[in-house]
Image (spheres, rainbow, N blue to C red):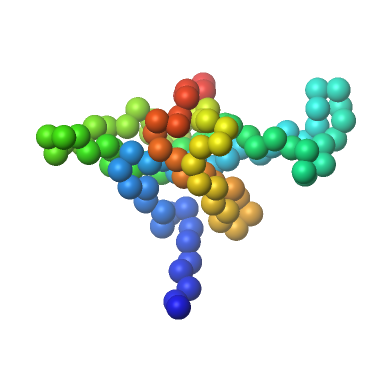
Length: 103
């Protein structure tokens, strides 16, 4: 089996999928206590690094996505597929799992 080398520039989501770089998890609480790795919650905010061409409609046309590369987004907690490239964490999710664009 041949090994495949993946990088952010080689990943192109299909259809209405979005590739998001996950923001770093909080290291400490509001009270100043440091959290161990197993107590940290999975972040729900990230930056869009790649988008698909859009959802294919019944008439054969593509419906463009509401998000674009560079947008900071809030997404559902258990949505998507987690992917680790090097030391960075990403999530590949459907556009319907994106809840909001964060400014």
